[in-house]
Image 1 (cartoon, rainbow, N blue to C red):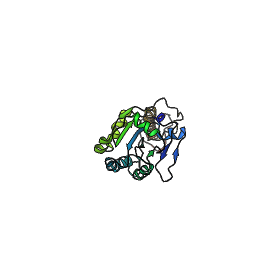
Image 2: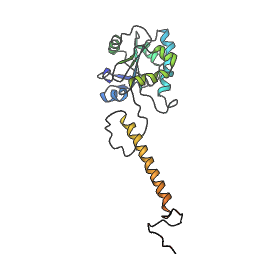
Image 3: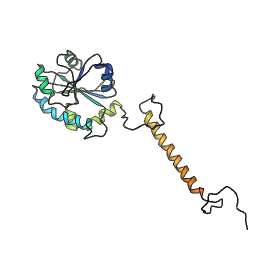
Image 4: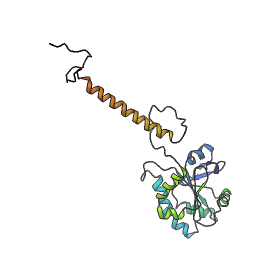
Length: 226
């Protein structure tokens, strides 16, 4: 999926319209994410009605106000507008964390042909490997809201790394995406065993050989009988 926009420019839908044009920037924002390509235009009434639904969907999966950890999701608007002014007008209605392809970039039309988009609005859902999860998810987003993202995530087999690695995890070159989860599980179990052993030792620390309680720790010697 990252390859789809390498050597191309993505623009952030903020007031400065910052451009992401380096390989590092593109990989950083698209790698290991489900990608939504939103094909629409300002003159389409269905698109206008769908925008608030899509904004709410995206907001609830990305904004800290609604969710502690932003989901592994990216959304790119592919304009099918007839003029740059129409595109700019439509962008003002879209969420500020969305990305878009510049109007003058002919790659817009290439993407439309690549995914055989004929109707608007269309939301193409892509797995991280670039394969198509849904050719048009407009109906699913409208009916199911954020619940459909769970199905996409499961189908794409994306593992969210929303936990802190233990300080002893010095090997960051994990062999698999599930390796950190597995290691964390074993680490916790090992900690539990250590704590259980320590409690038993503390409990027996002040007991003599015969099991009688005492204020002094047992020194390992038998008491002499009187």
